[in-house]
Image (cartoon, rainbow, N blue to C red; front, side, top):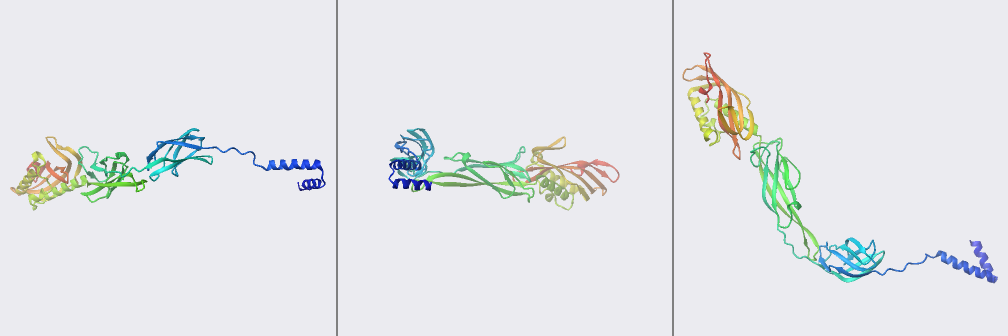
Length: 394
């Protein structure tokens, strides 16, 4: 290329007209080949209107922008805040959603491929002003097991129960609220207004565990410039669940009662200390057992005994039916095999009394307590005579 350029300059220097013309053509061609080609004429974008012409400083106002030479890929800003969801309907119309911005009049700008059109003070941001939002109100809080007739706010060890909160709120739906549950012990499963709570496997019973819930309402209000700021209400509630090991507690009371009964030195009032007043047969279970113990003390001296481990069934609102003719209403039944070695005071003769004692219990909303004691068995005298056990314990 450098060689050809030298020759052209030489020919020009020697005054060759043919070569001067040729050189001029080559120079023009080279200049054209180095150019960027023809330029497109600029597009004149205009913005002629925004509808509606005002909206909240929180943003979220759907607007329609009119003008000329709109095209796909257009962007929109209102007062410098980029609008969202821009959809170009035609070269003369598009829709968008305003972004948050401080209060006041704002220019609308549409941009396409580096070209922009502007309409001054086309849209006015208006602050919504103070927001009145009252905290949620907890109207009820419950904890219920699934067993028939199970008391409210009651759980046995490792039992799963349902905890639920009922809330009222004037501004927010209960589904939009946030519920944070916690428990001093045990585990919570699930979220929302209703959850499952499982009592711990190991716990000192009887005892109580507090289930707590925090209800959170999140809402938006305006700052001094009208811009949105997030606020929240937090409302706390709690319910105390009584935790028991029902079978163990009833078994321990039944065994303790029979062991106290088996010690002839123990006063009758002490023997019936775990019997609840007003329950049992005709509401006189405690009185009946007290009289039974007094009768035994007056007629027998117990010299030895064996009380086996009670077999307990918990059935709230059920019955105990060891004796078909004696249906005892109860929440729990304990069957206990017992053997007594005793001496009948009137004759001085030794006896062996053996059988099964049915001890019933109820839950009074606070604690377990005993109600009735019914014995079925027989007395074997030293002479081999068999007497009804009711002579020893009725």
